[in-house]
Image (cartoon, rainbow, N blue to C red):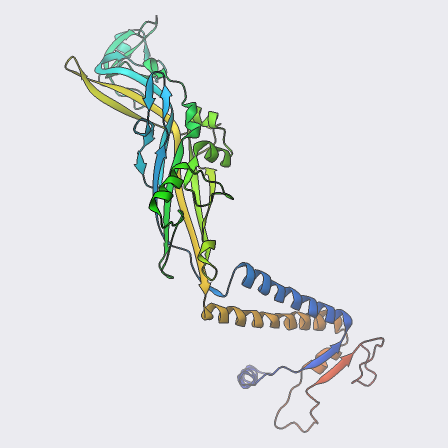
Length: 406
């Protein structure tokens, strides 16, 4: 066959019409495979697609959300009473709030010249020539003056620097941890809006009596089973849920994520649309140098006409409130699409079984001869019936064939 004949046959064959032919194959093995695959496909669509994933619903996964947080609690440190203004940053915040659990305080710092800390690179010296005037080490505390001075009351010397004196690494005073902070509470108010469905929900249960609701909010503590609508969370409870020791958090600090998850089926009663909470440590673990959470701030004042400050290095817990939302409601369009997809997928069963039949069972091409017919207008041969039966029960002969072994 030349190239021209090949192209001609291909072109003419392109316009042929193909239609499926019904053939019943009485083979128990093939029948079990066919019904088994059908069962798996139908079970997948009924249980997973429609029941679990709710494919009959229109959904929204990017809601609008707002978060308001506030820390509550009072504690005593020595002779001082500490309230939220002292240990909460900010006292009333948004989706991030932190509380101080332990402080390292450097008192009465002034702008002056003093010895650099010995742990800074090239800070140790024996003569003034070892210190370069005006040099600044970004891991150090200030600008070098060019003098080599005794390190406070020690016998060795370090380079003198211009900075806030005394330096923090030398003069910081460690205060005891606020152990009572385990009972501090965090008030978290969250509102979520699904604009596609025009639905607004909040994590505080609505009440017609405003006074009674305020009394309830002042006394309740969140419990997943008993108080799911209470927005007050104890720091100790948050640490336990995040699987962290509160004493360790007091030592190193840490960042904990508060995840609020809204999974709302709007086909059901609105009472079922309520948040669930989960907690997880977000910063690197405590055995790494970069773990924990701390920050510095200073309180400035004037003493004898000289500007002074108290430097505070605060270790604490930072809470990051992260909101996720998903809402679904019945809609005919996704229902039709999912149903058509399910019915179409059932057709895969026939394709799989045809492949098994023609590849592994049809050794003598009996099935393929029955399955594929070529019919044309010029054909004078009698056309076999479209519905045929091929049997292989207890025999190696087809009931429509004449002695052709299977």
